[in-house]
Image (tube, rainbow, N blue to C red; front, side, top):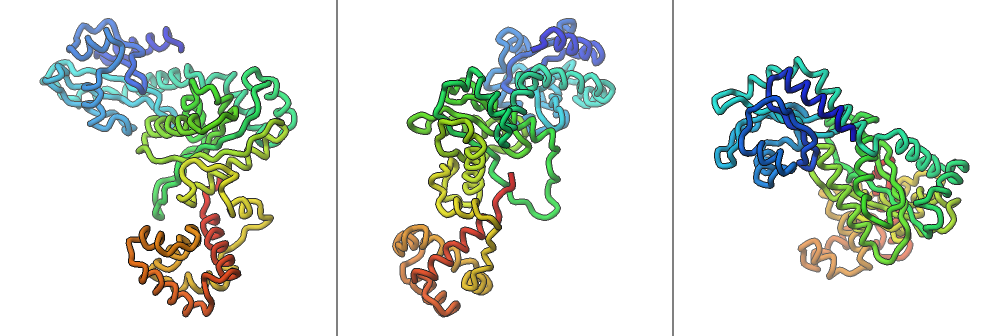
Length: 408
Protein backbone atom coordinates (compact mmCIF):
# COMPACT_ATOMS: atom_id res chain seq x y z
CA UNK A 1 0.00 0.00 0.00
CA UNK A 2 1.20 3.51 -0.84
CA UNK A 3 1.09 4.56 2.82
CA UNK A 4 3.08 7.78 2.61
CA UNK A 5 1.03 9.11 -0.28
CA UNK A 6 -2.26 8.22 1.45
CA UNK A 7 -1.17 9.87 4.71
CA UNK A 8 -0.16 13.00 2.81
CA UNK A 9 -3.55 13.20 1.10
CA UNK A 10 -5.37 12.85 4.44
CA UNK A 11 -3.23 15.61 5.96
CA UNK A 12 -4.00 17.96 3.06
CA UNK A 13 -7.72 17.24 3.37
CA UNK A 14 -7.60 17.86 7.13
CA UNK A 15 -5.83 21.18 6.60
CA UNK A 16 -8.38 22.25 3.98
CA UNK A 17 -11.36 21.31 6.14
CA UNK A 18 -9.69 22.20 9.44
CA UNK A 19 -11.09 18.97 10.85
CA UNK A 20 -9.75 15.93 12.64
CA UNK A 21 -9.90 13.15 10.02
CA UNK A 22 -9.34 9.42 10.07
CA UNK A 23 -9.29 6.97 7.20
CA UNK A 24 -10.35 3.36 7.66
CA UNK A 25 -10.69 0.33 5.42
CA UNK A 26 -13.86 -1.69 4.95
CA UNK A 27 -13.03 -3.87 7.95
CA UNK A 28 -12.69 -0.90 10.31
CA UNK A 29 -8.90 -0.91 10.29
CA UNK A 30 -7.00 2.37 10.58
CA UNK A 31 -5.19 3.41 7.40
CA UNK A 32 -4.28 7.03 8.15
CA UNK A 33 -5.23 10.00 10.34
CA UNK A 34 -4.56 13.73 10.61
CA UNK A 35 -2.00 14.73 13.22
CA UNK A 36 -2.26 18.52 13.34
CA UNK A 37 -5.81 18.79 14.72
CA UNK A 38 -5.73 18.48 18.53
CA UNK A 39 -9.47 17.76 18.94
CA UNK A 40 -10.18 14.16 19.92
CA UNK A 41 -12.90 12.29 21.77
CA UNK A 42 -12.35 8.98 23.56
CA UNK A 43 -13.48 6.99 20.53
CA UNK A 44 -10.86 8.65 18.31
CA UNK A 45 -8.12 8.22 20.92
CA UNK A 46 -8.87 4.53 21.36
CA UNK A 47 -9.11 4.04 17.59
CA UNK A 48 -5.70 5.58 16.99
CA UNK A 49 -4.17 3.43 19.73
CA UNK A 50 -5.79 0.13 18.80
CA UNK A 51 -5.96 0.81 15.03
CA UNK A 52 -9.31 -0.99 14.93
CA UNK A 53 -12.87 0.27 15.36
CA UNK A 54 -14.37 -1.35 18.51
CA UNK A 55 -17.43 -3.55 18.01
CA UNK A 56 -19.83 -1.23 19.87
CA UNK A 57 -18.70 1.81 17.88
CA UNK A 58 -18.92 -0.17 14.63
CA UNK A 59 -22.47 -1.23 15.47
CA UNK A 60 -23.45 2.42 16.08
CA UNK A 61 -21.95 3.45 12.74
CA UNK A 62 -23.55 0.61 10.79
CA UNK A 63 -26.89 1.42 12.37
CA UNK A 64 -26.82 4.67 10.40
CA UNK A 65 -26.34 2.95 7.04
CA UNK A 66 -22.69 3.63 6.24
CA UNK A 67 -22.16 0.21 4.64
CA UNK A 68 -24.61 0.93 1.81
CA UNK A 69 -24.31 4.72 1.58
CA UNK A 70 -22.89 6.30 -1.55
CA UNK A 71 -23.03 9.86 -0.19
CA UNK A 72 -21.77 11.39 3.08
CA UNK A 73 -23.68 10.25 6.15
CA UNK A 74 -24.03 12.13 9.43
CA UNK A 75 -23.53 9.80 12.41
CA UNK A 76 -24.80 11.50 15.59
CA UNK A 77 -22.95 11.74 18.89
CA UNK A 78 -23.24 8.91 21.39
CA UNK A 79 -22.55 9.96 24.98
CA UNK A 80 -22.47 6.35 26.21
CA UNK A 81 -19.59 5.63 23.83
CA UNK A 82 -17.84 8.94 24.51
CA UNK A 83 -18.28 9.87 20.88
CA UNK A 84 -18.78 13.26 19.24
CA UNK A 85 -20.85 13.48 16.07
CA UNK A 86 -19.12 12.63 12.81
CA UNK A 87 -19.65 12.64 9.10
CA UNK A 88 -18.73 9.48 7.21
CA UNK A 89 -17.61 9.96 3.62
CA UNK A 90 -17.80 6.68 1.65
CA UNK A 91 -14.86 6.63 -0.76
CA UNK A 92 -16.08 5.23 -4.07
CA UNK A 93 -14.43 4.56 -7.42
CA UNK A 94 -16.78 3.72 -10.32
CA UNK A 95 -19.38 2.53 -7.85
CA UNK A 96 -16.85 0.43 -5.94
CA UNK A 97 -16.34 1.05 -2.22
CA UNK A 98 -12.69 1.32 -1.14
CA UNK A 99 -12.86 2.85 2.35
CA UNK A 100 -14.35 5.49 4.66
CA UNK A 101 -13.08 8.95 5.60
CA UNK A 102 -14.37 10.26 8.93
CA UNK A 103 -14.60 13.99 9.76
CA UNK A 104 -15.26 14.81 13.41
CA UNK A 105 -17.51 17.62 14.55
CA UNK A 106 -15.85 20.35 16.59
CA UNK A 107 -18.20 20.06 19.56
CA UNK A 108 -21.50 18.61 20.73
CA UNK A 109 -23.18 21.83 19.68
CA UNK A 110 -21.93 21.87 16.10
CA UNK A 111 -24.24 20.63 13.38
CA UNK A 112 -22.99 18.06 10.84
CA UNK A 113 -24.39 20.39 8.17
CA UNK A 114 -21.27 22.52 8.59
CA UNK A 115 -19.09 19.61 7.48
CA UNK A 116 -21.46 18.57 4.69
CA UNK A 117 -21.32 22.10 3.26
CA UNK A 118 -17.51 22.01 3.21
CA UNK A 119 -17.12 18.69 1.38
CA UNK A 120 -17.95 19.79 -2.20
CA UNK A 121 -14.94 22.11 -2.12
CA UNK A 122 -12.59 19.13 -1.61
CA UNK A 123 -14.37 16.73 -3.97
CA UNK A 124 -11.32 16.48 -6.23
CA UNK A 125 -9.05 15.56 -3.30
CA UNK A 126 -11.53 12.96 -2.07
CA UNK A 127 -11.65 11.36 -5.52
CA UNK A 128 -7.86 11.29 -5.68
CA UNK A 129 -7.72 9.62 -2.25
CA UNK A 130 -10.22 7.00 -3.40
CA UNK A 131 -8.26 6.32 -6.59
CA UNK A 132 -5.03 6.01 -4.61
CA UNK A 133 -6.63 3.49 -2.26
CA UNK A 134 -7.86 1.51 -5.22
CA UNK A 135 -4.52 1.58 -7.02
CA UNK A 136 -2.75 0.38 -3.90
CA UNK A 137 -4.99 -2.68 -3.72
CA UNK A 138 -3.24 -5.92 -4.76
CA UNK A 139 -6.01 -6.75 -7.22
CA UNK A 140 -5.50 -3.45 -9.02
CA UNK A 141 -1.77 -3.85 -9.61
CA UNK A 142 -0.75 -3.89 -13.26
CA UNK A 143 0.94 -7.28 -12.82
CA UNK A 144 -2.23 -8.82 -11.39
CA UNK A 145 -4.44 -7.33 -14.13
CA UNK A 146 -2.25 -8.79 -16.87
CA UNK A 147 -2.25 -12.24 -15.28
CA UNK A 148 -6.01 -12.22 -14.87
CA UNK A 149 -6.44 -11.22 -18.52
CA UNK A 150 -4.22 -14.16 -19.51
CA UNK A 151 -6.19 -16.52 -17.26
CA UNK A 152 -9.48 -15.45 -18.88
CA UNK A 153 -7.92 -15.81 -22.34
CA UNK A 154 -7.12 -19.42 -21.42
CA UNK A 155 -10.78 -19.86 -20.49
CA UNK A 156 -11.62 -18.70 -24.02
CA UNK A 157 -9.38 -21.40 -25.56
CA UNK A 158 -6.42 -19.21 -26.58
CA UNK A 159 -3.65 -21.77 -26.98
CA UNK A 160 -0.77 -19.43 -26.14
CA UNK A 161 -2.51 -18.35 -22.92
CA UNK A 162 -3.08 -21.96 -21.86
CA UNK A 163 0.59 -22.73 -22.48
CA UNK A 164 1.70 -19.71 -20.48
CA UNK A 165 -0.47 -20.31 -17.39
CA UNK A 166 0.68 -23.94 -17.38
CA UNK A 167 4.10 -22.65 -16.37
CA UNK A 168 2.93 -20.51 -13.46
CA UNK A 169 4.36 -21.81 -10.16
CA UNK A 170 0.95 -21.90 -8.45
CA UNK A 171 -0.46 -24.06 -11.28
CA UNK A 172 2.43 -26.14 -12.66
CA UNK A 173 2.36 -29.67 -11.29
CA UNK A 174 -0.55 -29.05 -8.90
CA UNK A 175 -3.29 -31.00 -10.75
CA UNK A 176 -5.76 -32.53 -11.02
CA UNK A 177 -7.96 -29.45 -11.05
CA UNK A 178 -11.47 -28.22 -11.64
CA UNK A 179 -12.81 -24.77 -12.45
CA UNK A 180 -15.48 -22.96 -10.46
CA UNK A 181 -17.67 -20.08 -11.61
CA UNK A 182 -19.17 -17.84 -8.93
CA UNK A 183 -21.91 -15.30 -9.52
CA UNK A 184 -24.45 -13.26 -7.56
CA UNK A 185 -27.89 -14.81 -7.41
CA UNK A 186 -29.99 -12.98 -10.02
CA UNK A 187 -32.53 -10.55 -8.59
CA UNK A 188 -35.80 -10.23 -10.45
CA UNK A 189 -36.57 -6.59 -11.18
CA UNK A 190 -39.77 -4.99 -12.34
CA UNK A 191 -39.73 -2.91 -15.52
CA UNK A 192 -38.06 0.40 -14.92
CA UNK A 193 -35.89 -0.97 -12.12
CA UNK A 194 -32.23 -0.35 -11.56
CA UNK A 195 -30.08 0.45 -14.56
CA UNK A 196 -27.45 -2.00 -15.75
CA UNK A 197 -24.33 -1.57 -13.58
CA UNK A 198 -21.27 0.08 -15.06
CA UNK A 199 -19.09 -2.47 -16.89
CA UNK A 200 -15.82 -1.40 -15.25
CA UNK A 201 -17.40 -1.34 -11.81
CA UNK A 202 -18.81 -4.85 -12.32
CA UNK A 203 -15.44 -6.25 -13.41
CA UNK A 204 -13.66 -4.62 -10.50
CA UNK A 205 -16.18 -5.88 -7.96
CA UNK A 206 -15.91 -9.46 -9.24
CA UNK A 207 -12.10 -9.39 -9.42
CA UNK A 208 -11.52 -8.13 -5.91
CA UNK A 209 -14.33 -10.20 -4.36
CA UNK A 210 -12.86 -13.36 -5.90
CA UNK A 211 -9.34 -12.48 -4.78
CA UNK A 212 -10.41 -11.91 -1.17
CA UNK A 213 -12.64 -14.99 -1.23
CA UNK A 214 -9.67 -17.23 -2.06
CA UNK A 215 -6.97 -15.76 0.20
CA UNK A 216 -5.62 -18.50 2.47
CA UNK A 217 -7.52 -21.31 0.72
CA UNK A 218 -4.74 -23.62 -0.41
CA UNK A 219 -6.87 -25.41 -3.01
CA UNK A 220 -7.48 -22.14 -4.86
CA UNK A 221 -4.73 -21.71 -7.44
CA UNK A 222 -5.83 -18.52 -9.18
CA UNK A 223 -8.91 -16.33 -9.66
CA UNK A 224 -10.16 -13.73 -12.12
CA UNK A 225 -13.30 -11.68 -12.60
CA UNK A 226 -15.56 -10.60 -15.44
CA UNK A 227 -18.45 -8.14 -15.42
CA UNK A 228 -20.95 -10.81 -14.34
CA UNK A 229 -19.00 -13.56 -12.58
CA UNK A 230 -15.72 -14.77 -11.12
CA UNK A 231 -13.67 -17.80 -12.15
CA UNK A 232 -11.42 -19.82 -9.82
CA UNK A 233 -9.05 -22.68 -10.62
CA UNK A 234 -9.02 -25.17 -7.76
CA UNK A 235 -6.83 -28.14 -7.06
CA UNK A 236 -9.15 -31.11 -6.70
CA UNK A 237 -9.43 -32.57 -3.21
CA UNK A 238 -11.75 -34.80 -1.23
CA UNK A 239 -14.86 -33.04 0.01
CA UNK A 240 -16.04 -29.57 -0.87
CA UNK A 241 -15.27 -27.65 2.34
CA UNK A 242 -13.16 -25.16 0.38
CA UNK A 243 -16.06 -24.48 -1.98
CA UNK A 244 -18.42 -23.63 0.87
CA UNK A 245 -15.89 -21.36 2.57
CA UNK A 246 -15.04 -19.62 -0.68
CA UNK A 247 -18.69 -18.99 -1.58
CA UNK A 248 -19.37 -17.63 1.91
CA UNK A 249 -16.48 -15.16 1.60
CA UNK A 250 -17.46 -14.22 -1.95
CA UNK A 251 -21.00 -13.41 -0.79
CA UNK A 252 -19.64 -11.29 2.05
CA UNK A 253 -17.23 -9.37 -0.20
CA UNK A 254 -19.90 -8.65 -2.81
CA UNK A 255 -22.24 -7.32 -0.14
CA UNK A 256 -19.80 -5.05 1.65
CA UNK A 257 -18.01 -3.73 -1.42
CA UNK A 258 -21.06 -3.44 -3.64
CA UNK A 259 -23.30 -2.04 -0.92
CA UNK A 260 -25.96 -4.73 -1.42
CA UNK A 261 -27.63 -7.09 1.08
CA UNK A 262 -26.03 -10.50 1.49
CA UNK A 263 -27.88 -13.22 -0.39
CA UNK A 264 -27.22 -16.88 -1.17
CA UNK A 265 -24.96 -16.46 -4.19
CA UNK A 266 -24.07 -19.35 -6.48
CA UNK A 267 -21.18 -21.53 -7.58
CA UNK A 268 -20.92 -24.09 -10.35
CA UNK A 269 -17.90 -26.33 -10.85
CA UNK A 270 -16.62 -28.53 -13.63
CA UNK A 271 -15.53 -32.10 -13.97
CA UNK A 272 -12.00 -32.86 -12.79
CA UNK A 273 -9.28 -32.56 -15.42
CA UNK A 274 -5.54 -33.29 -15.50
CA UNK A 275 -4.68 -31.79 -18.90
CA UNK A 276 -4.80 -27.99 -19.08
CA UNK A 277 -5.86 -28.25 -22.71
CA UNK A 278 -9.28 -29.08 -21.23
CA UNK A 279 -9.31 -25.69 -19.50
CA UNK A 280 -11.86 -24.11 -21.92
CA UNK A 281 -14.21 -27.11 -21.66
CA UNK A 282 -14.03 -26.98 -17.87
CA UNK A 283 -14.87 -23.27 -17.96
CA UNK A 284 -17.96 -23.97 -20.09
CA UNK A 285 -19.04 -26.73 -17.70
CA UNK A 286 -18.69 -24.53 -14.62
CA UNK A 287 -20.69 -21.73 -16.27
CA UNK A 288 -23.47 -24.12 -17.28
CA UNK A 289 -23.56 -25.54 -13.75
CA UNK A 290 -23.95 -22.12 -12.12
CA UNK A 291 -26.59 -21.12 -14.69
CA UNK A 292 -28.55 -24.27 -13.86
CA UNK A 293 -28.31 -23.46 -10.15
CA UNK A 294 -29.69 -20.00 -10.90
CA UNK A 295 -32.88 -21.40 -12.46
CA UNK A 296 -33.43 -24.53 -10.36
CA UNK A 297 -33.24 -24.19 -6.57
CA UNK A 298 -33.26 -27.99 -6.17
CA UNK A 299 -29.61 -28.01 -7.30
CA UNK A 300 -28.55 -25.93 -4.26
CA UNK A 301 -26.15 -23.00 -4.17
CA UNK A 302 -23.14 -25.14 -5.18
CA UNK A 303 -23.79 -27.14 -8.35
CA UNK A 304 -21.62 -29.90 -9.77
CA UNK A 305 -21.81 -30.10 -13.58
CA UNK A 306 -22.00 -33.89 -13.31
CA UNK A 307 -25.19 -33.61 -11.27
CA UNK A 308 -27.21 -30.95 -13.13
CA UNK A 309 -29.04 -33.64 -15.08
CA UNK A 310 -31.04 -32.62 -18.14
CA UNK A 311 -29.49 -29.13 -18.08
CA UNK A 312 -26.34 -30.73 -19.51
CA UNK A 313 -28.39 -31.67 -22.56
CA UNK A 314 -30.12 -28.29 -22.77
CA UNK A 315 -26.81 -26.45 -22.48
CA UNK A 316 -25.20 -28.57 -25.19
CA UNK A 317 -28.09 -28.34 -27.64
CA UNK A 318 -27.18 -26.80 -30.98
CA UNK A 319 -30.28 -24.62 -30.74
CA UNK A 320 -32.36 -23.17 -27.93
CA UNK A 321 -35.22 -25.55 -27.22
CA UNK A 322 -38.50 -23.73 -26.67
CA UNK A 323 -40.87 -25.20 -24.07
CA UNK A 324 -43.85 -24.30 -26.27
CA UNK A 325 -42.61 -26.84 -28.82
CA UNK A 326 -44.42 -29.30 -26.55
CA UNK A 327 -48.15 -29.10 -27.31
CA UNK A 328 -49.01 -30.62 -23.93
CA UNK A 329 -46.89 -28.08 -22.06
CA UNK A 330 -48.30 -25.13 -24.04
CA UNK A 331 -51.88 -26.24 -23.38
CA UNK A 332 -51.27 -26.86 -19.71
CA UNK A 333 -49.56 -23.51 -19.22
CA UNK A 334 -52.46 -21.72 -20.92
CA UNK A 335 -54.97 -23.43 -18.62
CA UNK A 336 -52.94 -23.03 -15.43
CA UNK A 337 -53.99 -19.48 -14.54
CA UNK A 338 -53.47 -20.02 -10.81
CA UNK A 339 -49.97 -21.53 -11.26
CA UNK A 340 -50.84 -24.59 -9.23
CA UNK A 341 -50.79 -27.40 -11.79
CA UNK A 342 -47.35 -27.05 -13.44
CA UNK A 343 -45.39 -26.49 -10.19
CA UNK A 344 -47.12 -29.49 -8.60
CA UNK A 345 -46.44 -31.67 -11.63
CA UNK A 346 -42.78 -30.65 -11.84
CA UNK A 347 -42.30 -31.40 -8.16
CA UNK A 348 -43.95 -34.78 -8.68
CA UNK A 349 -41.59 -35.57 -11.55
CA UNK A 350 -38.55 -34.34 -9.57
CA UNK A 351 -39.42 -36.52 -6.55
CA UNK A 352 -39.80 -39.76 -8.52
CA UNK A 353 -43.59 -39.74 -8.50
CA UNK A 354 -44.11 -39.76 -4.73
CA UNK A 355 -47.55 -38.24 -4.14
CA UNK A 356 -46.98 -38.31 -0.40
CA UNK A 357 -43.75 -36.28 -0.65
CA UNK A 358 -45.37 -33.73 -2.96
CA UNK A 359 -48.38 -33.36 -0.71
CA UNK A 360 -46.12 -32.80 2.30
CA UNK A 361 -43.98 -30.24 0.43
CA UNK A 362 -47.05 -28.28 -0.73
CA UNK A 363 -48.90 -28.66 2.60
CA UNK A 364 -51.81 -30.39 0.88
CA UNK A 365 -53.72 -33.61 1.40
CA UNK A 366 -52.87 -36.44 -0.97
CA UNK A 367 -56.40 -36.33 -2.37
CA UNK A 368 -55.73 -32.76 -3.56
CA UNK A 369 -52.74 -34.02 -5.57
CA UNK A 370 -54.83 -36.78 -7.16
CA UNK A 371 -57.56 -34.26 -8.00
CA UNK A 372 -55.03 -32.00 -9.73
CA UNK A 373 -53.62 -34.93 -11.70
CA UNK A 374 -57.14 -35.82 -12.82
CA UNK A 375 -57.69 -32.21 -13.90
CA UNK A 376 -54.48 -32.30 -15.95
CA UNK A 377 -55.58 -35.51 -17.69
CA UNK A 378 -58.84 -33.82 -18.65
CA UNK A 379 -57.16 -30.62 -19.85
CA UNK A 380 -54.55 -32.21 -22.12
CA UNK A 381 -56.34 -35.44 -22.96
CA UNK A 382 -53.42 -37.63 -21.89
CA UNK A 383 -51.99 -39.24 -18.75
CA UNK A 384 -49.22 -36.93 -17.37
CA UNK A 385 -47.65 -39.93 -15.62
CA UNK A 386 -47.44 -42.00 -18.80
CA UNK A 387 -43.92 -42.64 -20.07
CA UNK A 388 -43.72 -40.52 -23.26
CA UNK A 389 -46.03 -37.74 -22.01
CA UNK A 390 -44.12 -37.54 -18.75
CA UNK A 391 -40.79 -37.30 -20.56
CA UNK A 392 -42.10 -34.59 -22.89
CA UNK A 393 -43.63 -32.48 -20.11
CA UNK A 394 -40.66 -32.83 -17.76
CA UNK A 395 -38.21 -31.83 -20.49
CA UNK A 396 -40.39 -28.86 -21.49
CA UNK A 397 -40.50 -27.69 -17.88
CA UNK A 398 -36.71 -27.75 -17.62
CA UNK A 399 -36.38 -26.05 -21.00
CA UNK A 400 -38.68 -23.33 -19.67
CA UNK A 401 -36.40 -22.88 -16.66
CA UNK A 402 -33.25 -22.93 -18.80
CA UNK A 403 -34.69 -20.20 -21.04
CA UNK A 404 -34.64 -17.89 -17.99
CA UNK A 405 -30.98 -18.53 -17.13
CA UNK A 406 -28.67 -15.54 -16.55
CA UNK A 407 -26.48 -14.89 -19.57
CA UNK A 408 -22.85 -14.85 -18.45
